[in-house]
Length: 408
Ligand SMILES: Cc1ncc(COP(=O)(O)O)c(C=O)c1O
Image (cartoon, rainbow, N blue to C red; front, side, top):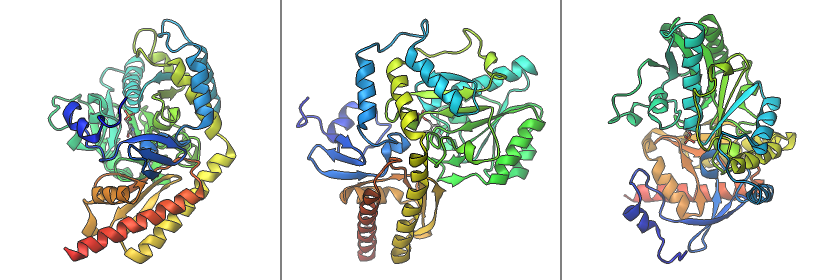
């Protein structure tokens, strides 16, 4: 493939315009470093939106993928396969879950979770018990069902009619939730830390209260851990750092370390409602995906990696606070583990995109979580030197933006 012809400009010619990618085109990555077509080097504090949690081209993942590529790529669910069974065994051993359903993305894992919750309520209670409660500013994917359950109306605009029976309560507000929950509620779904909504952690007592309400009304508690899972917050799954256990948990993003795979985890009590023929997906349990995810799990689920996430969070916070002491640009720095948000001060609200572009100019890849929050979600094993160097680049980007704004 000639890189002289394949440029960012080609995107506008041949791609559906639902994305607006940055101007540089990355071609190669190693650890927390990425190079573009012109061989410019970047520090990657995004890991592809919390996906490449072991960095780019981790040798153990490359080895496992190549080994599986020489064995079998795909079989369909008419047959099972060794990597899928081994991964399901590992996930059930390491979590609350007894049963696993594999798919390809976070949206698909959530779609399965919402369908399972309705089917379970229909099997055990009544067809009327079909209401799902989610939270304002939540994000659960882009299928019509998941986008409707998500708490950001802008993503539903133009797509009506959308599925019914879905309600939204303000996040971290137990009293408001009590107003909405009823015997017709089949599930309450929450992110332990709202990701796309602005990196907003759930309060511990709120999480406890949600579990209690689920128990009181025979509703299932679904934890969407698509972004928080697989070590991102310093535990294998974020629920492990709370007092509660969900009935269903969804995982994707970091699960495959960059190879597409999703999973819905649940219990022996709930799983039978997905009996033969009720749900499925062609690629679910794909051997390549499951072999890689199995190795990701082995690599991440180790005390030194998970403790490292907590230590690196402290380093990030210290660096961001130091930048803030100098430039007074952040209203709040928050998050958990290596899912960190820095909310911009009022004058800069709505302008997070400018910081991404300025960072790119300095050789730094960062994210936003909505228009007001800079998001950092690097590899869980990013070297401390890369964090420091990345933060130095961020400071340069901020200084440059502020000086340009002053000059205007
Ligand atoms: C919490 C959460 N749920 C679901 C999704 C959707 O995942 P996917 O894009 O893999 O469908 C995302 C993606 O950002 C997410 O952050």
